[in-house]
Length: 133
Image (cartoon, rainbow, N blue to C red; front, top):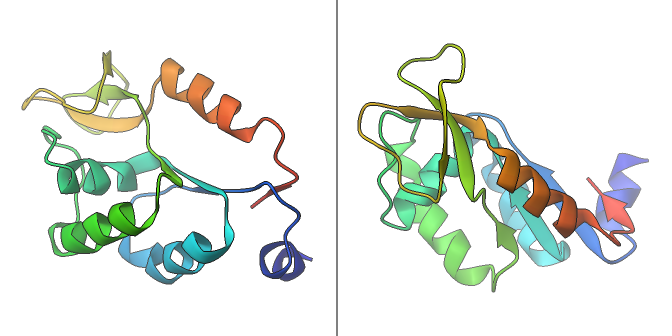
């Protein structure tokens, strides 16, 4: 059933990808760029994409060896990739201490997840979607 939804999706087709590592999802992102109308990227992997755009990411998780690939995906996505607009942050991998708007984070904090404005953006992106994977 999942294969049919991805191989022959009803459009608009919105894909949601999260988690910590870009490297675990490389093939998936590349394939989805060809099929999806929008790709929402959240979780720790968003910070590799932010760094690829030249943003300060503080102590957030980043895969340095995937920054160029993230740049490539952003360039060829034609606006399909939707990234968070705020981050839930903390000085270490523990409870959230602050919400920061925008892509740039202070050096002493790490982004742990999306913030409330990103939730609203992602909800808006999902409106009208006929396939969500």
